Length: 269
Figure 1 (cartoon, helix red, strand yellow):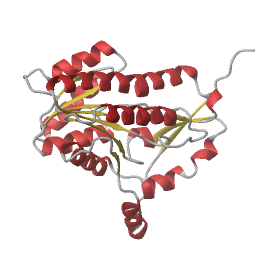
Figure 2 (spheres, helix red, strand yellow):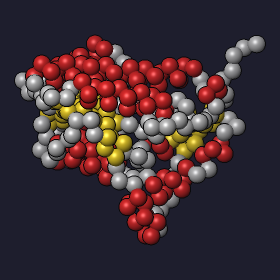
Figure 3 (cartoon, rainbow, N blue to C red):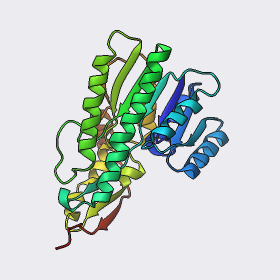
Figure 4 (cartoon, helix red, strand yellow):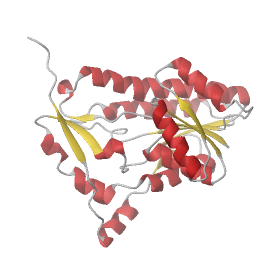
């Protein structure tokens, strides 16, 4: 299969790329940072897992179109597209979060996912087949107060994806979501919190220690989904209870977390 993964230069995306390449699939990775793409491609190459990739800001429709063309450069159809790129949220009261950050998060997590999905689907309909997998996260199914930047975007992705799954019934296109849960990535280990809300982070170290999974575990699971008998409309989830119990019994090591405090944003009076 020829598979495109957005946000695939680190964390879950890169782990999924490794798992897919190890299975013999062709993988195209992208990120908004061209240097990150070059480093990831070099790392994969040195590990005997050659991939292709390019810089792509998924908020730019033209760059998404260019990525789609790049993925087909050798005349291969794009068999699957994984929307993994996204920005983390900031912990704090909603009105205290910088509006510039909120707008950027909406552009990346909602607009970017929308553009990638639409253009991938247009290609899938034209070629007669394809698989689209959108990655979810905390807050996709219920509100999370004081984490109200990231979660609502994932709620939108979940609803958006479920609607598309209904639209493609009866075709050779499958659309699904993947909830990886807590994964040890830069997004979850380097976090921002509004001043005065630091106490809301006190349970994060324990959650990371016992509930968090390594990117490789989540990446393998994702790779099996996208290349296996992926069911249209299915909401896939990474197993949580079993791995957590094993860590609890074995005594999992502490996971280092960096917490950065930012000032609350207010309007001038």
